[in-house]
Length: 417
Image (cartoon, rainbow, N blue to C red; front, side):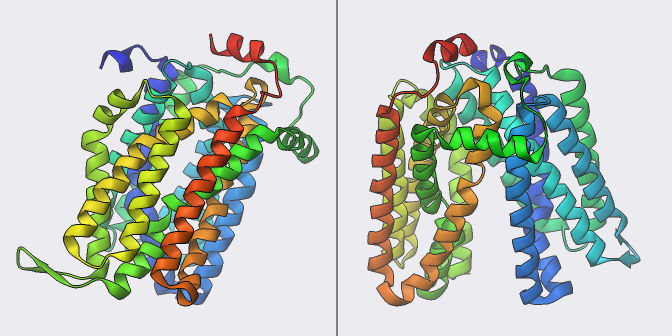
C-alpha cells in the first residue's frame, strides 16, 4: 500500500481508469463476435473483425504520433470522446424493441478507433510519470488490475450479455464520460512541448516521426523480440484451444463433464485467479532481479508450459502446466514492459509506444498460423517450434539490451529524475 501511495497522481488515477475500461469492455467486447455471427454470418463477421483490427492498428500508430505533438492528455481526451460517441451509437441501436446491427458495428468501430488513439498516449503518460525505481511495480500493478477487470467483466458478460445488452451498453457509454472527467480534471500533462515544436499532427509529420523510430535498431530488435513473445502469450487463443478441443481426454470433476472447451476455460480462470492473488507476492520476490534474466526466466516458463500442454491430454497434468506458464507470465510481463520503457527516447515516447502497439497484432497473425501448420508437423513439431521462438525472443532481448542507446543517456536520466 505504501508503494501505491508514493506513486505519482497520474499513475493512481490511471489504475482507476484501467479498471473501469477493462471491466465494461470485457463484459461486452468478447461477446460481440457472437452478436455479429448471429446478424451477419461467419464469413462477414471475419471480414468485419479484420476491418476493426486494421483500423485499430492505423489509429494506434497515429495516436502515438499526436501524443508527442498535442500532448498525452488531449490525445486521451479525444479518444474518450470517440469512445463515448461510438458506444452511444451502439446503445441507441440496441433498444429493447429496435436493433440495427449495421450501426452497432459502426459504433463499435468508432469506439475501437478512440481506444486505439488513446492507448499509446496512456502508455506514454505512464512512462513519463514513473521512474526506473518504481516502473516494474507500476507495470505489475496495472497488469494485476487489468486481470481483475477481465475476470469480473467476463463474469458479468456471461450472465447478462444475452438478455441485458442494452443495459450493459448504457454502462459502456457512461465509463468514457467518467474517464474523460478523471483525465481532464485529475491528471496533469507530462509532455515536454519544447522538445516537439517542429512536429505537427499531419500524416507526413507522423511518417517522419516513425521513420526516426525505425532508425533505432536497438528498439526494433526489442520490438521483434516482442512479436515473438506475443506468439507465445497468445497461444490460449489459437493452438492451445484447437489442441484441447481435438485431443483432450474428458474428465469428470465434482459430477461435471470436463471436455476440451471447458478445460480451456478452467485453465484461463486458474490463470486469472493466480495473477489476481499471487501477482503482488511474485513482484516483491523478483523486483531485485535484473530485467533481461527476469524476462528470460518468465518467457521460458511460459513457453515451456504451453509447449508441454500441446503434448498433454489429461486434466491434472494440464493444471500443473497452467501453474507453470502463469508463473512465467507474472515474472516476464513486468520485466518486458520495463525494458520497453527503458529503451524509449524520452522525446518520442508516444511514437515508440505506437510502434510497439503493432507487435501484438503481428504476433496474432503468426500465432493463428500454428493451427494450420499443426496438420503438417503435429503436436511435437508445434511444441518444438514454440520453444525455438522462445529462445529466439530471449536472444533478441539480450542483444537489444547490450546495444548502446542511439539517443543521449544524460537526457534520459534527466527525464526520469
